[in-house]
Length: 202
Image 1 (tube, helix red, strand yellow):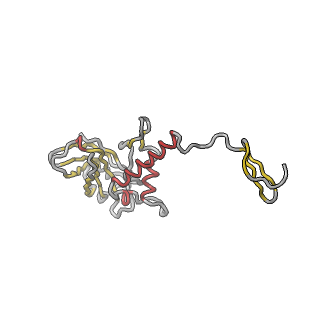
Image 2 (cartoon, rainbow, N blue to C red; image 1 turned 30 degrees about the vertical axis):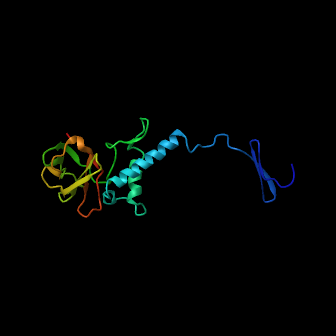
Image 3 (cartoon, rainbow, N blue to C red; image 1 turned 90 degrees about the vertical axis):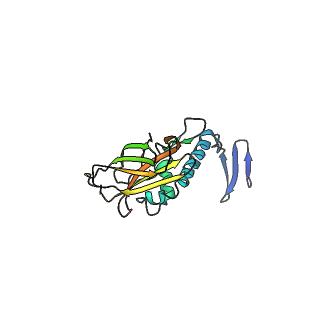
Protein backbone atom coordinates (compact mmCIF):
# COMPACT_ATOMS: atom_id res chain seq x y z
CA UNK A 1 0.00 0.00 0.00
CA UNK A 2 1.48 3.34 -1.05
CA UNK A 3 0.43 6.98 -1.16
CA UNK A 4 -1.54 9.03 1.38
CA UNK A 5 -3.68 6.90 3.68
CA UNK A 6 -6.63 8.14 5.73
CA UNK A 7 -9.69 6.20 6.88
CA UNK A 8 -10.57 2.80 8.26
CA UNK A 9 -11.09 -0.69 6.96
CA UNK A 10 -12.08 -3.90 8.69
CA UNK A 11 -10.44 -3.77 12.15
CA UNK A 12 -7.83 -1.16 11.22
CA UNK A 13 -7.52 2.62 11.23
CA UNK A 14 -5.18 4.32 8.78
CA UNK A 15 -3.73 7.85 8.79
CA UNK A 16 -0.63 9.75 7.70
CA UNK A 17 1.74 11.45 10.19
CA UNK A 18 4.98 13.22 9.26
CA UNK A 19 4.78 11.74 5.80
CA UNK A 20 4.47 8.16 7.02
CA UNK A 21 1.42 5.93 6.74
CA UNK A 22 0.27 4.64 10.14
CA UNK A 23 -1.95 1.59 10.56
CA UNK A 24 -3.45 0.82 13.96
CA UNK A 25 -5.94 -1.79 15.10
CA UNK A 26 -9.33 -0.81 16.48
CA UNK A 27 -10.16 -1.52 20.11
CA UNK A 28 -12.09 -4.75 20.41
CA UNK A 29 -13.73 -3.86 23.76
CA UNK A 30 -14.95 -0.31 23.72
CA UNK A 31 -16.05 1.09 27.06
CA UNK A 32 -19.80 1.40 27.10
CA UNK A 33 -20.91 4.65 28.73
CA UNK A 34 -24.31 3.02 29.23
CA UNK A 35 -23.09 -0.10 31.01
CA UNK A 36 -24.79 -1.14 34.25
CA UNK A 37 -21.81 -0.05 36.37
CA UNK A 38 -21.50 3.32 34.60
CA UNK A 39 -25.21 4.03 35.05
CA UNK A 40 -25.04 3.04 38.73
CA UNK A 41 -22.00 5.30 39.27
CA UNK A 42 -23.75 8.29 37.71
CA UNK A 43 -26.87 7.60 39.79
CA UNK A 44 -24.73 7.39 42.95
CA UNK A 45 -23.02 10.70 42.17
CA UNK A 46 -26.40 12.34 41.62
CA UNK A 47 -27.65 11.04 44.99
CA UNK A 48 -24.65 12.47 46.86
CA UNK A 49 -25.00 15.83 45.08
CA UNK A 50 -28.67 15.93 46.09
CA UNK A 51 -27.70 15.04 49.67
CA UNK A 52 -25.20 17.91 49.75
CA UNK A 53 -27.90 20.41 48.79
CA UNK A 54 -30.43 18.79 51.15
CA UNK A 55 -28.35 19.86 54.16
CA UNK A 56 -28.84 23.53 53.47
CA UNK A 57 -25.28 24.78 53.42
CA UNK A 58 -24.22 23.04 56.64
CA UNK A 59 -21.28 21.27 54.91
CA UNK A 60 -19.82 24.69 54.06
CA UNK A 61 -18.87 25.03 57.74
CA UNK A 62 -18.68 21.38 58.81
CA UNK A 63 -15.73 20.49 56.53
CA UNK A 64 -13.29 23.21 57.73
CA UNK A 65 -10.18 21.02 57.54
CA UNK A 66 -10.35 20.48 53.79
CA UNK A 67 -7.49 21.52 51.53
CA UNK A 68 -7.33 25.21 50.60
CA UNK A 69 -7.89 24.27 46.96
CA UNK A 70 -10.89 22.05 47.74
CA UNK A 71 -14.46 23.31 47.97
CA UNK A 72 -16.87 22.10 50.65
CA UNK A 73 -18.89 20.50 47.86
CA UNK A 74 -15.92 18.45 46.65
CA UNK A 75 -14.97 17.49 50.22
CA UNK A 76 -18.53 16.25 50.83
CA UNK A 77 -18.52 14.24 47.59
CA UNK A 78 -15.11 12.74 48.37
CA UNK A 79 -16.19 11.72 51.87
CA UNK A 80 -19.45 10.11 50.80
CA UNK A 81 -19.39 8.81 47.24
CA UNK A 82 -17.36 5.65 47.98
CA UNK A 83 -19.31 4.50 51.05
CA UNK A 84 -22.65 6.25 51.58
CA UNK A 85 -24.56 4.76 48.64
CA UNK A 86 -26.18 1.34 48.89
CA UNK A 87 -26.02 -0.32 45.48
CA UNK A 88 -27.41 -3.73 46.45
CA UNK A 89 -30.97 -3.02 45.31
CA UNK A 90 -32.51 -2.37 41.92
CA UNK A 91 -31.52 1.31 42.15
CA UNK A 92 -28.86 2.97 44.35
CA UNK A 93 -30.09 4.68 47.53
CA UNK A 94 -28.43 6.78 50.23
CA UNK A 95 -27.33 4.85 53.31
CA UNK A 96 -27.86 7.59 55.90
CA UNK A 97 -26.07 5.60 58.59
CA UNK A 98 -22.85 5.96 56.55
CA UNK A 99 -23.34 9.50 55.27
CA UNK A 100 -20.90 12.05 56.69
CA UNK A 101 -22.26 15.60 56.99
CA UNK A 102 -19.13 16.69 58.84
CA UNK A 103 -15.52 15.55 58.74
CA UNK A 104 -12.40 16.42 60.67
CA UNK A 105 -9.83 15.43 63.26
CA UNK A 106 -11.70 16.15 66.48
CA UNK A 107 -13.04 13.07 68.33
CA UNK A 108 -16.52 12.14 67.13
CA UNK A 109 -19.45 12.62 69.49
CA UNK A 110 -20.61 9.51 71.35
CA UNK A 111 -24.42 9.50 71.35
CA UNK A 112 -25.91 7.85 74.44
CA UNK A 113 -29.61 8.44 73.73
CA UNK A 114 -31.92 9.83 71.05
CA UNK A 115 -35.61 10.08 71.83
CA UNK A 116 -38.65 11.84 70.45
CA UNK A 117 -40.83 13.72 72.93
CA UNK A 118 -43.53 16.35 73.12
CA UNK A 119 -41.02 19.20 72.72
CA UNK A 120 -38.84 17.68 70.03
CA UNK A 121 -35.86 15.33 69.71
CA UNK A 122 -33.62 15.02 72.77
CA UNK A 123 -30.08 13.75 72.18
CA UNK A 124 -27.80 12.67 75.01
CA UNK A 125 -24.05 12.50 74.47
CA UNK A 126 -20.78 11.94 76.32
CA UNK A 127 -18.74 15.13 76.56
CA UNK A 128 -15.36 13.31 76.61
CA UNK A 129 -13.75 16.44 78.05
CA UNK A 130 -10.92 14.36 79.51
CA UNK A 131 -9.56 13.77 75.99
CA UNK A 132 -6.64 16.03 74.96
CA UNK A 133 -8.29 17.43 71.81
CA UNK A 134 -11.64 18.11 73.47
CA UNK A 135 -12.72 21.41 75.03
CA UNK A 136 -15.82 22.35 76.99
CA UNK A 137 -16.17 25.37 74.67
CA UNK A 138 -16.58 23.20 71.58
CA UNK A 139 -19.90 23.62 69.77
CA UNK A 140 -22.09 20.51 69.55
CA UNK A 141 -24.46 20.66 66.58
CA UNK A 142 -27.48 18.40 66.10
CA UNK A 143 -29.05 18.18 62.64
CA UNK A 144 -32.34 16.50 61.74
CA UNK A 145 -33.69 15.97 58.26
CA UNK A 146 -37.36 15.04 58.15
CA UNK A 147 -38.92 12.79 55.54
CA UNK A 148 -40.79 15.81 54.16
CA UNK A 149 -37.43 17.44 53.39
CA UNK A 150 -37.47 19.90 56.31
CA UNK A 151 -34.12 20.56 57.98
CA UNK A 152 -33.84 21.41 61.69
CA UNK A 153 -30.70 22.12 63.69
CA UNK A 154 -29.64 23.09 67.19
CA UNK A 155 -26.27 24.08 68.63
CA UNK A 156 -24.80 24.49 72.11
CA UNK A 157 -21.45 24.36 73.92
CA UNK A 158 -20.21 20.89 74.77
CA UNK A 159 -19.96 21.63 78.51
CA UNK A 160 -17.66 20.20 81.16
CA UNK A 161 -19.86 17.62 82.86
CA UNK A 162 -19.43 13.95 81.98
CA UNK A 163 -22.58 13.96 79.86
CA UNK A 164 -24.69 16.53 78.06
CA UNK A 165 -27.94 16.72 76.14
CA UNK A 166 -29.24 18.87 73.31
CA UNK A 167 -32.85 19.43 72.32
CA UNK A 168 -33.88 19.96 68.73
CA UNK A 169 -37.17 21.74 69.27
CA UNK A 170 -40.12 20.56 67.19
CA UNK A 171 -43.44 20.16 68.99
CA UNK A 172 -45.32 16.97 68.23
CA UNK A 173 -42.57 15.29 66.22
CA UNK A 174 -42.44 11.48 66.08
CA UNK A 175 -39.48 9.22 65.42
CA UNK A 176 -41.08 8.00 62.18
CA UNK A 177 -40.99 11.58 60.85
CA UNK A 178 -37.17 11.65 60.90
CA UNK A 179 -35.19 10.65 57.81
CA UNK A 180 -31.82 11.02 59.52
CA UNK A 181 -30.17 12.64 62.52
CA UNK A 182 -26.53 13.57 63.17
CA UNK A 183 -24.35 15.15 65.82
CA UNK A 184 -20.97 16.72 65.18
CA UNK A 185 -18.59 19.14 66.89
CA UNK A 186 -16.78 22.30 65.82
CA UNK A 187 -14.14 23.92 67.98
CA UNK A 188 -14.71 27.45 69.25
CA UNK A 189 -13.38 29.26 66.17
CA UNK A 190 -14.78 26.74 63.68
CA UNK A 191 -11.38 25.71 62.32
CA UNK A 192 -11.65 22.08 63.43
CA UNK A 193 -14.49 19.58 63.20
CA UNK A 194 -15.34 16.01 64.09
CA UNK A 195 -16.79 13.35 61.84
CA UNK A 196 -20.56 13.33 62.19
CA UNK A 197 -22.23 10.64 64.28
CA UNK A 198 -25.47 9.09 63.05
CA UNK A 199 -28.19 8.79 65.71
CA UNK A 200 -31.17 6.43 65.64
CA UNK A 201 -34.26 8.10 67.11
CA UNK A 202 -36.34 5.93 69.43
